[in-house]
View 1 (spheres, rainbow, N blue to C red):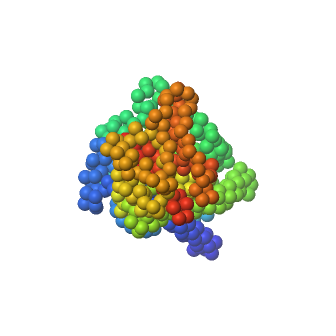
View 2: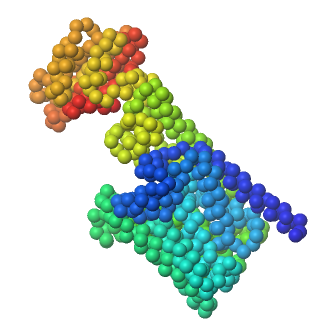
View 3: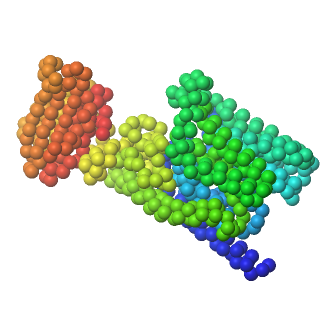
Length: 591
């Protein structure tokens, strides 16, 4: 082994190790979010995973293989995922390397793989860092690319050392691997079927023998794809999206238009680079095999993306494009030379641009991932704090901020805790943190009211108990609302025990006896509480017959503006805002 080869090998593996360590860090900076919490709640234990997944197959989706992977990880402490998930990322980069080069330890080529995955992967964080997302996409692609690498090896070298072409074990093993590959992800697995068929067709065209395992593997992949697509749960899930009711023609036309527009806005230069690399690579190296393989992966990538036209969702640039982008990255790398000659201006120039683009993007993306980690953990730490204080029904700021980039796992496309305490994600989050319920409010309301509000009051979810608690001299209670909209069992309590209590602690405004004529009609009280200016208003907009309620303190409306009774509670001692609720017709407290 010469010195130059040994040095290349050391640098190559140093880059691999450094990449792994960076991905470990990014995984540790990615908390559990969205579907992670839901799948944890829906998975009873290791011995129920198959039964739980069968239920999901019947009721929601057919992606059983990748969701089994997700459930296994989610039952373990996240540190296991943080350590193992980067290994899957490294494995995918090495599979791309195997699919695109015959040379060992090409440093420049491996760097292009890393740069391409970072720069061109849609929703990087959702695909590679988010636990449920990574199981669906990254781990699914490890299975699919392993399957395709075997077909690729057979095609370019006419043998795979550890596979006996006529051996029954090999035939069954490839059928099983094909089954898993076809059962991972609808469009990416469909692309794998196309590529397996393409490898067989290319060998047939060259009049090369077709091993029986290549046929059994293709049959397995088609079988897995059919099992996944035909899941009863897919039909149920599709009813949640309006596109499912469209005609075939409308889906096709509008889907193709939307996907093309999305590609133009987000992947134009990427696709142009792939096309140029393929053409220039053939002109420079005159390698017809590379040209055909590259075109095959381009076709599979484009088909994998455009088949989304028939999907009920996922047409915008996002994680559903991952499989297509992955195949296009492989096409780019197949055409990319193993060693860049300084005279190859296109490749040397492009490599320089990729380095610069990656450097800026990596710095900004890592900062954004760190900021996202900080924001999410601030919310989660607040829930832990509230539980410690005895508040088992807290509210916290919702996840409605936009990220600076697509690199954090957090996304507004994911399911997050909302106002409805009974929503599945709300219940799953409450279960994870050991709470009775959890709901979200706007960032503004959380900062103004609940972040430093009363944990004691926030824990109350029933009106009668809430009324009893706030009818206390340590509180100043501001009321605004239509009492007739409050359940009858509470009216006597309000009239006799709360609203008309002597003293200044209870201050209210209502529209019960105001005429319906006029636009709008107000009942209004203006007072000063300490240094605070308070304006309590109620009214009804005649044209829409819409009731509105406002409790304005120092020009900020603190009310929930519900149609029932709105209450803002202040500390009698400090005049700090302690809580803001609306009492609806069922006697429930909402924030």
